[in-house]
Amino acid sequence: MFRRNDVLIGGGSGAAGPPAPPAEQPGRHSAGDLDALLGELPLFRTALRGYDRLQVDNYVAWAETELHAVRRANEDLLTRYGTCSAELEISRRLLACSPAGREQLRASERLGEILQLAADEAARLTEAGAADADRLRATARGEADALLRRAREVRDAAVADCARMRDEAEHACAEAAEELAAAHAEVRRLTGRLDEALRTLAAVGEEPGPTPPAA
Image (cartoon, rainbow, N blue to C red; front, side, top):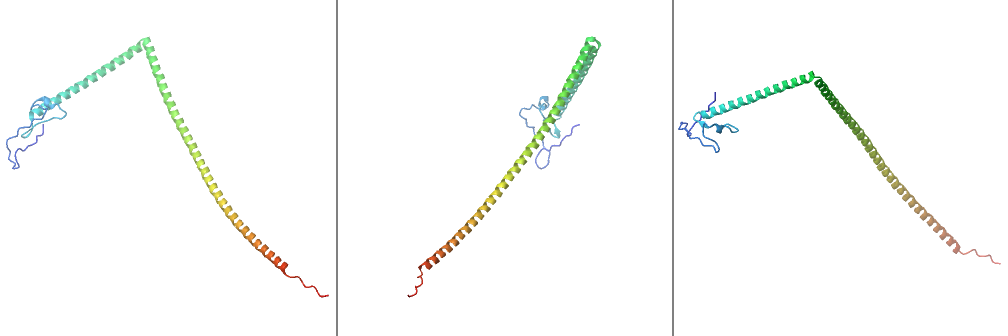
């Protein structure tokens, strides 16, 4: 029934000597005591050719007792469940036999139907509300995305316009500077010609006039 493990006692030569006395576990009772087997795991002392037979037998007896107790408790619960079910069925039949009972039963069934309809309506409204919320959320998200795209387009257009206007202003400034430089050059040229004309006139004015003929 049980598998026994051979235990070699002695030194490295392999000769079998007298079995060493088992060390007592703290908090455990001596061999054969059933209380020593009621822990979370069975603790068996090793004998010469396996575990202590008395401890193993006590543990098996305790396990079988616990199994029988659980089976009896299960059977008792099944019996009580069957009794309660039968009493409930009898009560329903008695209520259905009397006029007041039938009326109360119909009222109870009607109330159950009303509660079921209310629950179904609440579930439908909840689903409809969730669907509307999802639809509104999707619409709002779409509108927000559209506004964001429009704002980005306006921003990009404004940045492009600013860059274009800056380029045009720089080009206009460059052209104005060129025209101003050309005007300065023209003024200097005209001023030089005017100075030359004035010098010519001055030289002509300083020359002596023709000598009158003798009488």
